[in-house]
Length: 231
Image (cartoon, rainbow, N blue to C red; front, side, top):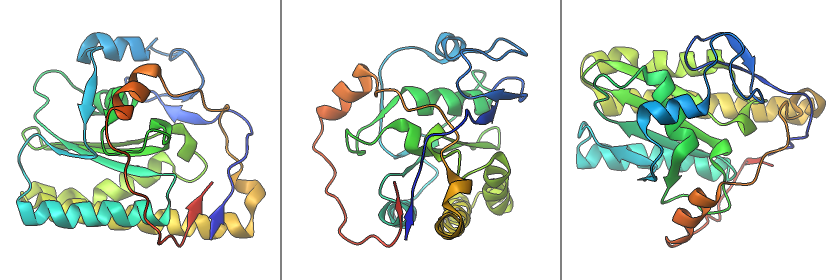
């Protein structure tokens, strides 16, 4: 099953600071002035090297990590152009988890993601167990297939489990719901491809920093089994 992404008009996103609707191509939020440079000033502009599953908070046991990684790989096999990342950590006074997730997805060089796969095709879940907060952001290449309400639904599936400290179970629930959403949209796109034209500007080239960091790592071996493709 194939999804064809075409160029069309600029898509809409919510500003990570004021949550007002803005064009993704806007250099800054017209409502509050927020920019990626503001996020850099708050969280840092240095190199960020992480893996797709980075459990800095130490909330996942070894067996849990394996289950979560399998669920992440399942989505990547179905949609080879997409990758899923999960970060857990104590953000303390630095965030606003929404702003942090926006910054992390834009500034990270994921060491286990192939060099040619841009962060704009990523989906990032951020969990702060201390503040009991979680957020989910996605790159603009996924705008035709995901909406803000989808991220809310995914996190809602996990919320009750996270409140009880059952983080792995919550993550698996969220990933399972995400997988279902992407599969549903892929079927809809096959029936009505024009409706799923990519609603963003042409993607920019991956930053030299991210490309250089990723190039220093062994490429990920591509999975042969794929049933659905995002192209």
